[in-house]
Length: 173
Image (cartoon, rainbow, N blue to C red):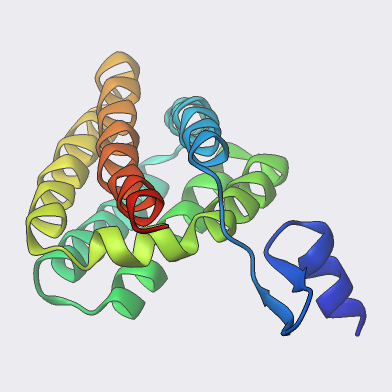
């Protein structure tokens, strides 16, 4: 029960008058704001990672980037999500920013339905793979400006793709 109350408090599930608890629908504006916050948050994480990373930590992140690119190219949604969680777990650990990791996890959870629809599209998967490769090159060369730019592009494109689904749902209602 406590877990259900927590999910309800975080806006993940909602009480429906006749059906009990259901997955909460996210509004277009809330989704927009989540992606805008993610842009800044992920750019901060990347910058802090670059500032703190040792050569060994860069080697580890290189493998995580490769795993994520591979998942985007040939994996399932579950494999993509797991690879992304591993990557961001490592980035946040090295960045020494547990708060950013917690916030990112909450924001990602709020948009999980949209993400699953967006990432299911083959063109978005392909685009994401290229975006992650660009991010990896910038991070591995410790180029903060290029890395911030690459992560911002990735989140903007994710937002563009995901927000289409809310507009589509709104026109059905």
